[in-house]
Every structure is written in structure tokens, then in C-alpha cells.
Length: 362
Image 1: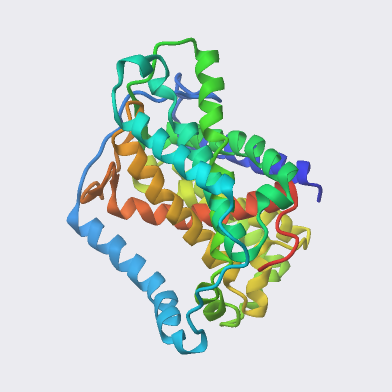
Image 2 (image 1 turned 30 degrees about the horizontal axis):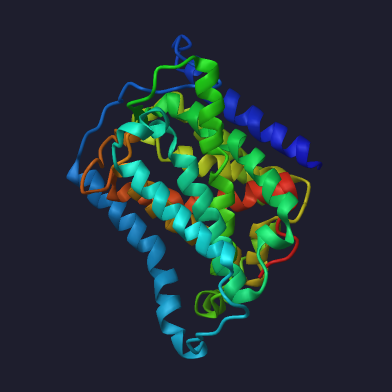
């Protein structure tokens, strides 16, 4: 299956499934739906400590084996403090760029006022270059130097990738934007797309950096194999659950909103499984968990910086999460950070299907 066909099927499923759910529920189409939405009105946040406790228990049960594996296999990996090259000069410039952008994002200087709403891409451009510099220092190679055209295409893919989540957010209303500048819808879409274009490069650059740490990779290089992951039936099940889940979001958005982060991943993995194409999840059949673990961790690392820099910027997003809106770290309720784990896997999978990465696993 070609990359364009794969991405086309994914986009069709994401766009159509929630609308089908609305039709099945007997509701009329919302008048506010748009392909390029600009959400400024908050949804409904609430807290049920019972639901919060149940979700926390499920997360602990899911993550405990991974954490146990990491700490109980420390004896198989000696701590390494090596570097393959000196930290490059352009890495130091990127660090200075990040510090300067961070200062501008969190201050309200009068001379910078016209550009104050647009600090997000400045910060993340510096982060991406810094992550590549860190990778180069440890491994002697990085995306920026070895695959610059791929990295450039990654920016383009990323813009469209995140707009799909903005589209799905119209159904669940989990986040909205504050202090948006007054401008035309077209201008805002262009400027916002610049910010969205940094998502995949940030996650993939962080992923590449994490693969240089044997302490992270070796415990998951040979673990429990999951042979059924490559079966044809698995593809049908994954595709069906992904489509059904997005459909149900259109019916019960305040209950099933977590599926927003899981179902696109299931759809994307289900499509190539049906054609028996190789995906990053096929490594699980041989017991290699590194692509799954490291991509999830990469998104969580980026998530920390996303939420930190967002917290005190002029233009920022705020959350309204049903049932679990409590114990915020910056703007994000603590349980919301769990969404970054499947999101990281999706970032790796969409990059693989859209641009042919990775050709081999670390």
C-alpha cells in the first residue's frame, strides 16, 4: 500500500467516523465544524475522584511491568558516559536561541508586542536543533546533518498531522486557545501551521537522542515477543476498533474523549497490517520493544516542555477535561500526560508511513 493511499485512508477514517457517530445518535451536524478550527471557547471540566482513581489504577497496572523491567535489568547495562563527538557550535547557538525565545515568550516587552503571540515556533525550532546537537554529541550523527531533506519534509507532514487533532478536538472540546491575536482566519491558519509544523520534528529528534542511551534501550531489546501482532486478523481488529472508537466519540464525547489519542494510532497501524506491510509495531513480534517504548517516552519528554513553555506564554492553550480535571502540572491535569504515550507511538508510525522512517530500528 502506497504512503499516499495509507494516509488518505487514515484521514478519511478520522474525518468521517465521528460524523457517522453523530448520525447514528440521531443528532444534527454541529454548525461549528471546520477542517481548520480555531477553538477559543472552553468545554466542560469536571472531577470525579472515583473515575480519577480508576484511571490511575489502570495506568499503574499498564506501566508497572515496563518500569519493573527497566529497574530490574539495570545490572545488564553499565552506565556509560561517552560521547562520539564534541558538542557542536551550532548546538550552543541553538541553546542560546532557546533561552532568548523563552525569555521573550514569558516577558511582556513593549518593543516585542507585535510578535509576542508568535514565540511558540521560535522555542521549538531551538529545541529541535538542540536535540539534534545532543544526538550528534553522543552518536556522531543526527537528522539535521545526515537527513536534512527528510527533516524538512517532516515539518510539512507535521502541520497537517496536528490539524487532524484540532479537527477531532471539536467533538471533545478538551483544549482551547487563549489571547489569540485579532487577524483573519486565513492568516491565523498559516501562522498556526508554522507552530504545528514543529511537533513531529521535535518528537522524532528526541526519539533519535533517546536511542543513544543503552540504559534505556537494552532492557527492551529482547523482552516478551508478541507474535500475533503481525497476524492479518490483528489488522482487521485494530482498524475496526479505531473506526468504532472515533465513531463513539461522536456519540459520547465527554466519556470517551481518551479515544482521541488511541484510535488514530489503531487506524494507522491497522491499515498496513491488512496489507501485511512492516510497521514499527512488528518489532514486537521478535520481542523488540524499543520503538514503542522510546517513541512514547520521546513524546512525554516533549510534552513536559510543551506544557512548561505554554504555561506563561501570552498565547497559550488551556484544558477542560471531564471527570479527571485535577492536580494540574502547568495547564495540564496530571492524568492528561498519559495521552502523550500513545501520541508518541503515533508520531513514529505516521512518520514511518508518510516518509519512510525508520528504515531500521536502533
